[in-house]
Length: 358
Image 1 (cartoon, rainbow, N blue to C red):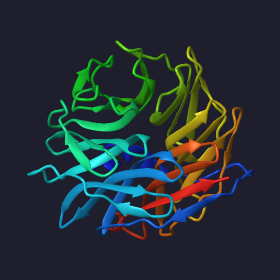
Image 2: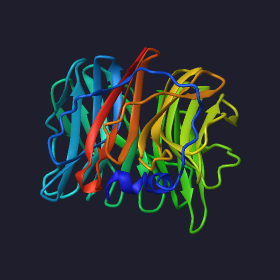
Image 3: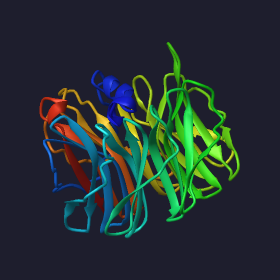
């Protein structure tokens, strides 16, 4: 099952019935980029930029009923599809997230029908890596602080999972959650400081989760008021500063962490966030989707200035459905986001990307 179904189903289903109520204050600066869609059904689920002129977007592509990983690289003027290893004999494979530490070092993670997936890009070639995840396991988030230090998170059929890359080997870590939980994103500022977020799901109630890695142990964070909440994205700028973005049943949510406590930030109702990228504690952009009164589903981006969120004017490729699933801001003056859009059917989905410059 694709990440957009396994991870984003709750937010997407809810969004189709929501009406947006965004702030009146808007900022301009988002512009569509020309993306190289190699097949008739392509999606971007993650974006990571080392600079304004070096971004990697990942997801999947489907042709003749077979889904394979998709990676495209932005060189400052053009998006170009890259050749990625397609696991032999695997009929279903996708990238979910990517993390780049330089213009020539990116790690992408995801899943195959046989288990978890990880591949490394050295600036010219993608190489498959061996991961410990078995069948039924998916990696949904990754964060690298160097080419030899990455943490990837996700879930198995029973609980959360986390893997660490030391430059040569992926090793499974012990997480702190019980069954019926999943990690959906992670952000690390060092090998000994990572925040993973996601949700606990039960038969009737879902609640958000956040776990912190101190270099040796994953510890559950104390959260309040998160019943019915999903955390889809997280961005940390230091060991004591993280922003988490997601959604509840009827509005977007963003929580800030100061190293000891979580606090809900003031938001606009009627929207959902799927990802967030921060360059400092007072400079973040969250991306996702919104359902305005016209009924059309549009890309969403909001800016955090340290005290409040304000809606930005995004660029839409058109159609009846367009959502941003990933965002990366290499500086306060530049952000790139990617997602999917379609005119009338998910079977015709195409990847799209847009860039914000000040």
